[in-house]
Length: 351
Ligand code: NDP
Ligand code: ZN
Image 1 (cartoon, rainbow, N blue to C red):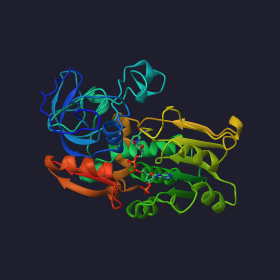
Image 2 (cartoon, helix red, strand yellow; image 1 turned 30 degrees about the vertical axis):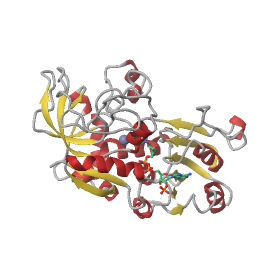
Image 3 (cartoon, rainbow, N blue to C red; image 1 turned 90 degrees about the horizontal axis):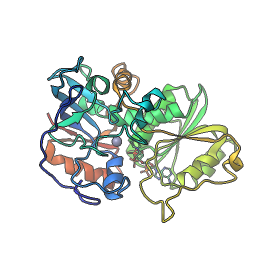
Image 4 (cartoon, protein in one colour; image 1 turned 90 degrees about the vertical axis):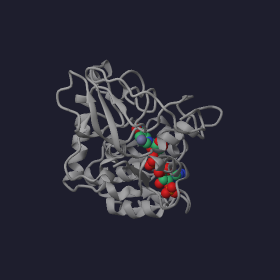
């Protein structure tokens, strides 16, 4: 990111490795919708000459002298979010917010990201996980952010066995929300979106009902399908700020509304997000909006690897566009901005 609205290639020095840190060389990368919000919407403010990217699988190139469990040559999963595990926020139970709101999000936020020949990982023992033998890079590179965020959506929605869930938006994040809802035992899962490939994968991941927000109001369609009752949980992973109104209007009293969206644009001059007074039960219907930033860290990556290794879900279905070589990275990022109808997620392999 050269500045808001402009991307390009730059030369930078190789990052320095602290005593508990690692320097990693990427072997698989994926651009994220969040990179699009950051560059083209300036969602987190101006950034100059910052290396983008936070979704990577890599090979350890160097470790600091206090790192115990990793060595050069190890193939690793690098979480998108790399908290300061010795912080006050971790003690309170919110690692992703270490160092302030969204502070666990370091790559391509306030330090250089992973779209460089080498990148720096803080606290290697806590923020790296070994890439299991035999896992494809296309599957693995979905773990650092897509699986972690999408499953967080299902976790924050407190889904109970047999409950009805609506997932608003089925890009890669929402698709992992669908898969997460199934893993948590949802009885019925509404998946809202229109891109044909996403619809196909949503069904494979466990969606029981597909709703197109382009074929009339999402609220009307879901209320009609549930005889007016609505749903026990909502996972938001698409749409603009108004999507919260849809979520509140389909939520039963007591339902959790779990937000995964990054509200990067479309907020208008006021920079506020609207709620609906009646749909929200006048503020008293216990329709709670829960938010979260992708969970990071080693244990999270190891657990998500187990999901993949043991065949509970196949993330490679989301890798619709697979490229080889650094010179394809820009194209992959631009694809994420354009969102062609056959796209779920582009992946760039570097070996
Ligand atoms: P995509 O753009 O690929 O997917 C968005 C989905 O939302 C699509 O299925 C789209 O439908 C659907 N959609 C658009 N408008 C509406 C609407 N009005 N009602 C219902 N559905 C709608 O995004 P990603 O999956 O890559 O990311 C989703 C969000 O998650 C982004 O905001 C991203 O920045 C954020 N994010 C947040 C993270 C966190 O830590 N909380 C981490 C990573 C990402 P269609 O099929 O028609 O395109
Ligand atoms: Zn991301």
